[in-house]
Length: 175
Image 1: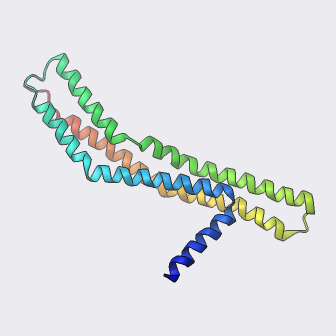
Image 2 (image 1 turned 135 degrees about the horizontal axis):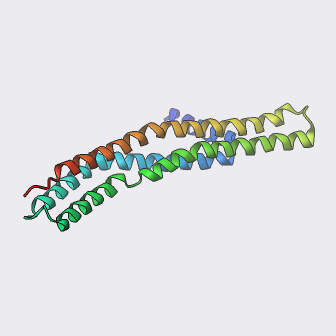
Image 3 (image 1 turned 90 degrees about the vertical axis):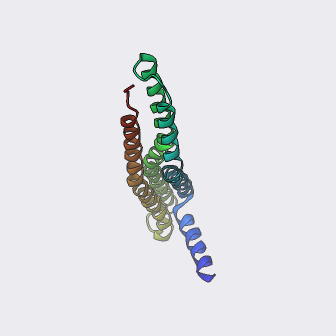
């Protein structure tokens, strides 16, 4: 149990070291990962059933060649596409937001360094170090957050496109 309190204390110290922008980066990364996990769970559980329901709805139609049938097929494919691509755009936005928030942390940390230099001159190295750490830690955290999500969001978007394409190919127009 001691390791847990040590870990919590280390995270708290790290969050204090990075300043207020680091909290926003942590919230952004948390939301990004919640959405990634939700999409992974959707692909493992609900998507197959949804694809089967869509195929069953299409196969139950007696007529599949008319313009009306073609429009119904497009609607079924679109509904499936919307369900599989849900939240992927938001994940991509959060991935792109992480480095931008890191840059904002860099700017606010450098402003703190310049304030220290203006008040006490460049001789107070200890006071400037807090601003430098506040400038570099959010940058690193933003980049780590973006890198952790960029690969998975690419895999998720490719999988969604592939599943929609498989469904589209399986809804045949014969009859």
